[in-house]
Image 1 (cartoon, rainbow, N blue to C red):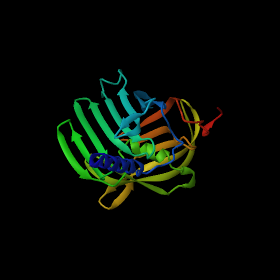
Image 2 (cartoon, one colour):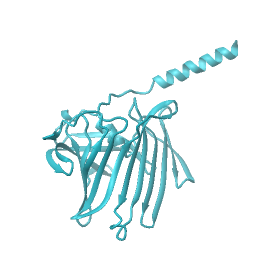
Image 3 (spheres, rainbow, N blue to C red):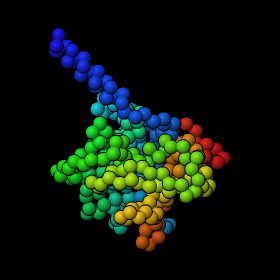
Image 4 (cartoon, rainbow, N blue to C red):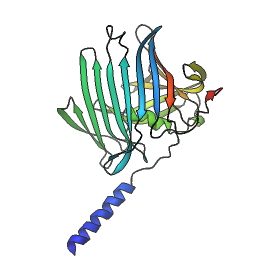
Length: 262
């Protein structure tokens, strides 16, 4: 009888723990979403990129997750200049929109890096592993995001209530460090890309240096509707800029109301 009582007690505690996680509404994205991009440098198409959500849930710690894959591959014609085969992956809780695991696999020229983060929202800790050997543990706020899941968290927010100059803060963890990532709303603009004409809201991450924030040289154009898909990303570099533009999309959770003339 004592064994049964202990088992029931454990099950009730486990059930409580599972239900105690936060829940956030999400009408922005869902299973099977696929976004394709071309990345250009000036007049040269240097690479292609794909951001996909697996068609089925992946269970982690008894919870359902979205498996999100982000790939960047340089074109074969550009490989002789700078070869890139990068892959990022995050597993996002479907009900709470927080990550359980993050993977980063970088292959750029002769540089190679493998980095993983395991998130433990129950204990507000993260475990990192670099190149499969160097394991470390860190404290972090509950529901801290990785650099990829942060985008999906922002997509669930109601950006229509923000105006130019407003700042959103997202607790983020990357490269063995937690930081409050501030994202500035730059304004709204209608843009043309290969997949059509879109009304967009422009967001810009802010870099932190000590206690001073400054805007970065990255601009993300999100569709100004409930989907908030990245339509364009512009990153200034030393000479010129890299620009990623949406070429194809499928599997969206709903209509793209921000698209004009469709």
